[in-house]
Image (tube, rainbow, N blue to C red):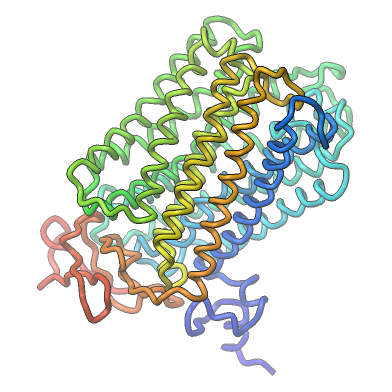
Length: 568
């Protein structure tokens, strides 16, 4: 009979040698309460979703290489871009940075053993898997052709595809997002160590906290909306479908009340990751720390007030459109503050052009283009002709995919020594970052031109004037695919064969770099030294460990004087 300790190890409640130990089998991972293992399991699902959605995208781009129907019928094309969008948004972009980097790094940044509610964290992972299973069912049965937004009345009475399974999957994924947000809020509020005030937190924690506010407040609206859609499709009640006395615009208001704040669920954590990498690889304190921190909160709050700019062509009143247009322009201000402060941080910084830093520079460039082109879509005079064209497709991908994906890849390279205890091949990391950057711009920049010329989205047959742009986008998509696949393979190879990493190979000053690489089961085995998150004088290089170690203060004093130490 197994002892209590053996049972605890089996289900992840007691330490083994370290969290990567797989000697207790699959069950020790499935039932683990260790935030690091949960983050790694999220990573498997998120990367698999990225590859699946990427395959769909390559199929779409290959079909669009010619002006006429090639190997996909119009119905198959609708199903392909719907599944691409749904998998990319719900299974990759929204959970990616919070679920992987947030879950792994957040407790260690606080000097803590785990998140506040480890069991709730595990439940979030299980719900993510369950929601993904529903999308797999859709993929394996009657497909889905409504678009990832599930617009009514098409999704309620016209489509013959498996809408209920897909919306149920999104509904379940919403609960996963809510649980994660709630966990992060409580963890940051209650588990900060003595000496770490709000304005001594790393900027990634500000990004995750602001994101969590959106997840907790906005996601229930989407859940209720999708549930109403399922009820209407099943029972033929008049909620959104005019055939039953419903209002289709009501669905759009509900959907975008969540989905535009969800844009910031996707991008705010990425901004936090960029702030962390930028400071470390420039060896410089972040310029305007409080402005960047407060801009995250401002983006989260203002983001709830701009959903109406998705309905400029819906027939809403001119005054309503004018108000939403003005608020849309205002939300660009805190985003511009971040970009300005990042550039000022780089100015006269000791910049190390490492792989993470190249991804930071890629993020700033891509997000800058995405943000600036959003001004055209926020203005009434230009949004009307650009609405539902490829200009919108390009803008959305520059902000969401370009921003989130480059931040995620950069963050994985930055924290990979902590994830795996191994260093990766730096030249190969840089090479595939170049492929990602060039491929992404070649894919989506021509779409701005197409959209300006009037090319509508969701069409798989088009006029010859657009062919050169579609062909460039197709070549770019394959280049981008090579870059993403290559970057992931560099990390996978490093996991098994990379040279061992020290606890702090980059010389960072935040707390997660004070534990070993990879961390022990309880993260820290010694007293944690709390200092300013970007005080790089608080770490010194130690040849004996081939890495950086914290400077131990001579005596413990108040946080306003010397760095404080807190026991683990």
